[in-house]
Length: 152
Image (cartoon, rainbow, N blue to C red; front, side, top):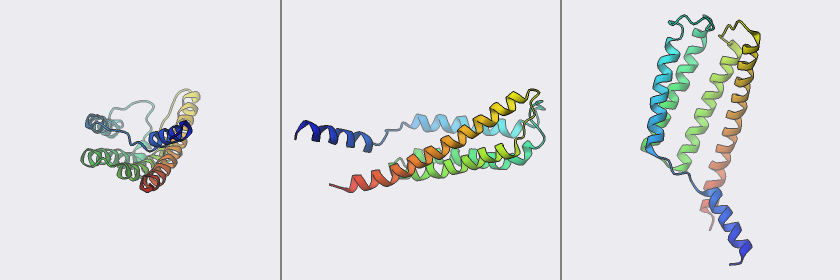
């Protein structure tokens, strides 16, 4: 095998290589999401000045997103195949996008400075763009890794 073929083979193997996940990563994500679920569901009770009463309108989708992430990480603890992770991540990204979009549209925050509102809306847009890109990457990984792995 010449050097070009070796480099091509090495590059292909690096692209197709599945990341090794540790159970501690999934457990940490589950714990974080449980804490986040508690916080999100108690924000209105804490009477924070920047949380508007309309926050109750986004609570349902936020709960769905957080619970889906908890269930996804539990599933990853049980089954860690790459194709399963990609499909699950695509679903979680879609739910996360809907949650971010709902937050953007309803925007249940009231800031004394308009700059904070613009910054948060900008961050929500960046987050939605990031979720779209992550979803495209997962779709490509799902398609090409499974197809290329089955080739000789």
